[in-house]
Image (tube, rainbow, N blue to C red; front, side, top):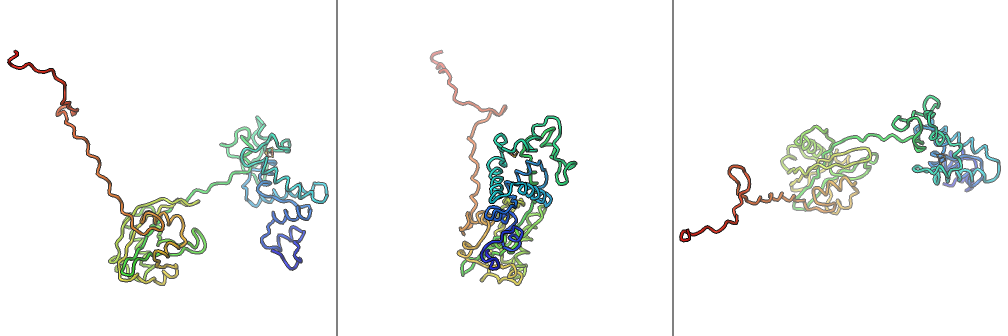
Length: 360
Ligand code: SF4
């Protein structure tokens, strides 16, 4: 981080510090300059962000450039109104952070203990009985109206601020995962490919995986999986079909933060004399045949481990799971039926002894 240009001492100007020193952003530059050098400069961290949005009742997207700009401007105005003196800005910045983290908390803010309560717009809006909240697009350039479900004639809680982040709806996706196992005299191998270094599950290994539409049939899913396989291996799809024994294992859900995934699992066993060579296309996708040890040490995600467990019982196990056949349903106790009404016929009825003929 040090820079020879500054003789090992960080610049005292927050703008230069942010611009010249790698890894230092606006917040860190402000914190260093105000707390270490006593420079009158603001900071806005998460706690101060929340505190200011409540003080000013700003209902605007939290990370929007307009919101960030306004909050930094306000923080700057506040810090410049402080009496000038060594260390005052640093103490002020720390006090605001502390107030945000200890009093104006994200949940259950302690407004009764807050020294800024009288000047807090969110708190004042909360206590108004008749007027609608003023934080609306009509009176503020950056604010958006508070949803009617959250606000009636008054703000229901100061926690309406800052504006809630919109949750993106998860995408629904489906993929066929082909757990490809080669079995031969040399032992067993599994075909894995490496995902691209950027994006979802970057750089992790996985069995050949093919995206499919939700509407496709089981047969079409198998076709899609075999098409991917014939692309990864240097073998014609006709030969591949001859040498492969597919077994549909099942479909499992796997939830990512933004994707609701369904994996349709195929166990594809190849029994050629040697593992089919990887094609040029397979090499581009870093496809490899791995033995047990290679598979165990491959860097894979939890989704792959779940898929593996469906085929082999658990991650690191290599014995194909045999589904226990459903036990035959217990035979119902044989019960004599009343041929007419279908009810039980009770056979053992205590009958009085019948008089013998001689006794009559
Ligand atoms: S009065 Fe409540 S909402 Fe306003 S700044 Fe203080 S703790 Fe935060």
